[in-house]
Length: 167
Image (cartoon, rainbow, N blue to C red):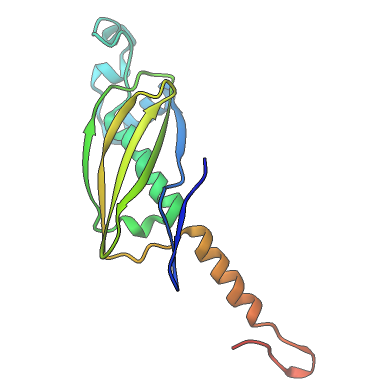
């Protein structure tokens, strides 16, 4: 997957999130149930779930939604989510042992960045869709931030004889 970058004079603004994938297996569902104290039998009881229209256990919607937050974290760092607002639709259930991938693309930039986000399964079926609004953040990719830090560190090299290179 290629990532499109829009250049400005001081910041690289990515047009797409770094996609995040994982298999939602029974262990992940059980651990999430324990963490959230949500033991709805459709999530954790195979016998119960086999009698539902789904035919087997399904992941908690918010467990699947967490992949979107991970995509923002991997792309920009977790601080970018402070004050974020999401308008999300849980479109289809995620069956146990299903691989899902979260992705997103910028649809509006400015003081408030708007991102279209989705989670799809390996069959290409959208299971979550919506938008996320990031308020008042200067978005710089984690890769660009690391590059800037490396450049600044390289500019502050001590030279022999007590001289220092740098700004």
